[in-house]
Amino acid sequence: MSPKQADPGVRVALMEAGARLVAQEGIEALTIRRLAAEVGASTMAIYTHFGGMEELRAEMQKEAFGRLNAKVRAVRQTADPVSDLTAMGWMYCTNALAEPHFYRIMFMEEPIDDPSVVSVSVTSFQPLVETVQRCIDAGRFESGDAWDVATQMWSMSHGFVTLRLAGLMTDEVVMQSLIAMALNVFVGLGDTRDRARRSIERAIRRMQRQAPIVVAASVPAGRDLHMD
Image (cartoon, rainbow, N blue to C red; front, side, top):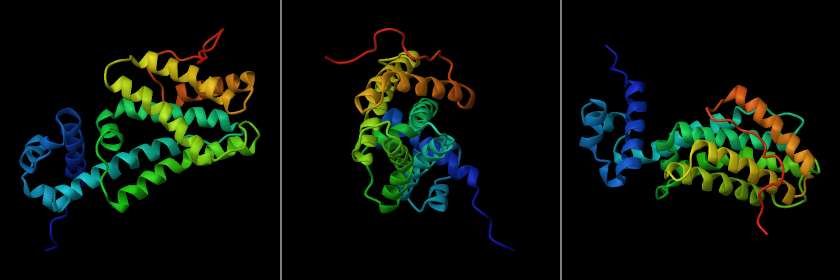
């Protein structure tokens, strides 16, 4: 007789429950007994699937980055790189709102010193860097370091998502504020306001079909938000 195979459904359930515990109660809540009780499994299940708690924490982060990577890479590349960049930002936000516990595991907990986690996090960031480079190559953005610009884009989205997860903004305020800020940032990076607006509008139309949200989203009319 062959040995009984570990149930992948239990593995995923353990990671999801672990992420929820950390997000809601802090890392100290993540104990073997508590986690096993959360999913109705034996404590041996943690060792069967992960070998121990340290490996579990690393696998939770890799799972979170893997899910984000899949969502971002689902954005189809078009002839308009600024629209693609906007669409990727949309996907980033909808992923965070749909799976807030995994988002906290990725970006709001102390990072784990594990090369495999670092590797998957870089992999999930690379599509953003590549799309920014396309914007530069197309002459939409001024020449610059694509990694640096991508970091600015990520920081912008992360800030609004964090405010939303803290309960300080509604979904609608987050999306509308991000759209307004993206318009101004794109112009600041070298795009014209009219071209940036058209690109954002294209992204909104395609993303409302591909990854719809319950709130209305549109490019703000009239005077755009900016800092003097």
